[in-house]
Image (cartoon, rainbow, N blue to C red; front, side, top):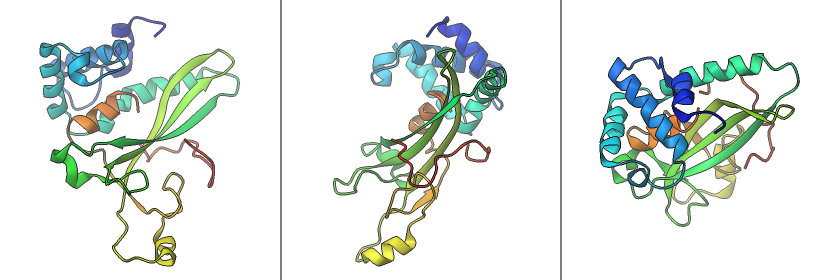
Length: 209
């Protein structure tokens, strides 16, 4: 990471609103562990005590976006210190939670819909300083779920219903949503940062993934 993971996590997450001192410490520990073990399932990335602590933290977080507040502020500070142009790199990711029945009512179709997969869509904006070869942070994140196509809908009706906003996908309508509650929503927040801030967005028709 270029720096000690615990030092990084302290700087990026300590002071998160809405958490008491115990959960502040747990958040720093969890973020540090995720940074040093970026791949695999949660049981593979944590020992049993860490995993139980992470799950308790998940249930303590009532607003996943708040987990990103400190990180976004640090990112803005790093951005303000750069005197040359930076890149805001956009990417849209489909997160598949088809097997997570506990959050099924909070999900929408992903992919082309033919496989019955469900999840949510996440559009991320990552700030990079190309001159200093530095990653400044994840400054913006939009999360939404797609609305299923009504049975028997014609293609013409589908296009009339389509939300043409960036990231919605041609022929697919969407609804903005808070991240699903529970593990999937929390981990998507802590793994790196809401649509209320005015940051650069991809131009209509631009390829973002």
